[in-house]
Amino acid sequence: MAAALGGATQIVVKSFQEATGLPTAAANAESLRATRSVLTMCTNQRLPDSPELVEEMHWIEIETRAILDRVIELGEGDVVVGAIAAFESGVLDCPFSCWLPIANKVLPARDASGALRFLDPGNLPIPREAAEYHRRRLEERSRHSGKPLDYEMTVADVYAVAEGRLVG
Image (tube, rainbow, N blue to C red; front, side):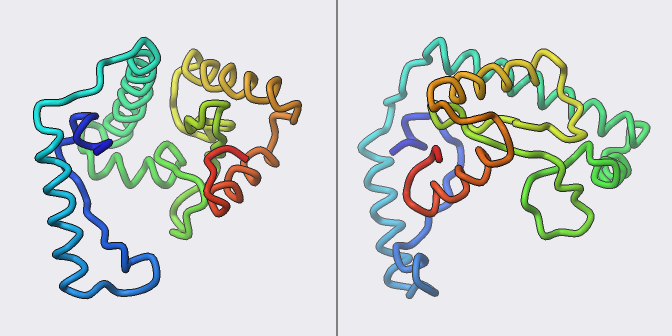
């Protein structure tokens, strides 16, 4: 339903059995039928844009453009060469990756609303204004919770997900 109301163009369907093992063909079929039913019910329905959503879209676009521009620059116009160089330099990075070429310098944390933020963007080439936006949102959480804005916030968020919550 969230995908339909949000206007998603693709959906990955998961079976309820995947929580404990490999799903049967019948469980996969049941999940697909349930998904199709919800999508049909939500046809032509969309959630209205809110000022908060518009602001988030603004920052995501700025950050994405900055990263892609740097990848293209590193590859001198060749995106594949640029992507390899970007992984090697940490310009393309993500947290908690077991893939050895990933720098693992990006440190996430959730703000008070549960939105994922960059506590530390590592070597991602996001503009200073975007990094400051993330910092402000995380500082709001820190003030609200009375907990410091540090690595422990990230750890608490990881454990929170295991307990069925977004924010630790």
